[in-house]
Image 1 (cartoon, rainbow, N blue to C red):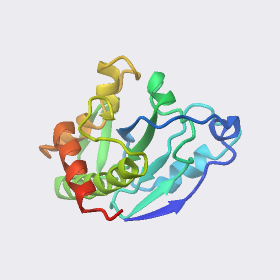
Image 2: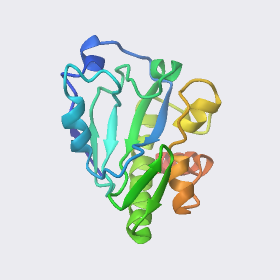
Image 3: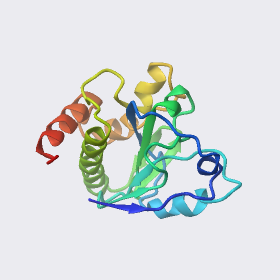
Image 4: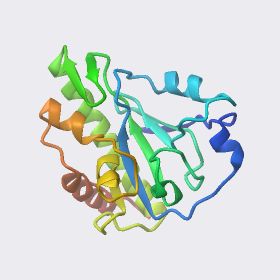
Length: 192
């Protein structure tokens, strides 16, 4: 996994210049069949795009993280108070999905979709481990690593169901508890 700087310098979220004290990281999935983060980057890097802004995107192959905001910059990813405390990371989803409503999709190539989910999951584990090390965060502590869905349940984010809707519909078996455990284990392998 490599990290490529793709700062959304024209996005109003970036130009406000607001900083946060990083207390956690929120995991998202994009909620549409778009494997290429650069599509979002081209659309969002505009002074009129004031609807959202995240810290990074993981491509659908799990090969590259596009960092779109400085990690300690206040993002617009959760629609709630977690914007003031959490880094927001989006996992891209494969082109073989067709969404039938906000959180339900039809999968046209289960093997491809499952492979993408596995690759983005692993990339997210490594990225979150690195960020937890950088900001001295305990991934097992309550509220440190959360999904958008968990943020909604905790009343710190809007009513999204990602990424659990994505994992569950594909039958990956992934859970946020498992993700946090995997991040903890990945942290143990990182060198200081």
